[in-house]
Length: 285
Ligand code: MG
Image (cartoon, rainbow, N blue to C red; front, top):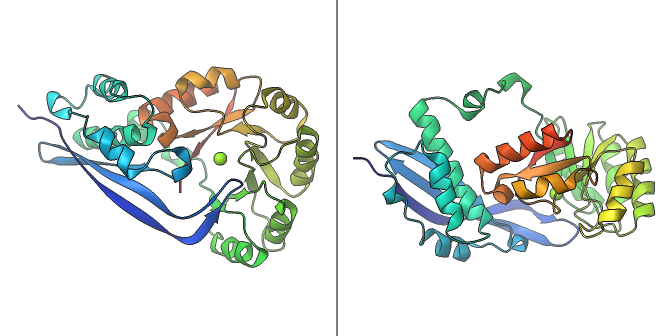
């Protein structure tokens, strides 16, 4: 009988530009590359672990050493396999996601179908992908904006002291729709609302995590008054967190690395939609 075997190795993604958001800067993204072998097929997955989220190649290796997939002979029993992986230790979201993604890749290869088809979606209706511009001086913002030309949406990091300078610099070059992500960098709800009005005039379409996630009442007030949708990112991790964002935010940012992979992320998207909330998919570079 065939068994699933599990392999992994660390890898560092080197960034072309130093990436700066409201709370930190970095020049690499450490990842773990995962392979699940079954019969003559290989499913590939990856854990992306920006240091501020608390996972590392070391924590992922420690977690992976506890994972024994050889006990499973049927990759299609995905719920059982992923429930086992999730139960080994708390947290380790990205490490779990790497296994989940590799398992989906493997099962997709066994089915000879991509998952958008398995889940009944239409490729032509795929939402647009944005290009992210970090917090930077105008010359770098200009350079990145030019590089982003093929993209139909820009995601712009704000939340330090030069928000208007960044947005105005981009608007000198292009009218491409922008979404902004303050990464909890704004602190005052009235200032956040004033900024939302200014940003709307500049062709911004939504705002991600404007205020610290603990300021729930302020965020609910902002969402009620803001001319732009307010999206939760840092405030939400997994499926169990979705319901509580209803009435506080307009929508949620789902990330595979937060949600422990595709299986739970898909459930989060469906739940949020059923609650009448907006959804987006984010990544960790
Ligand atoms: Mg974000």
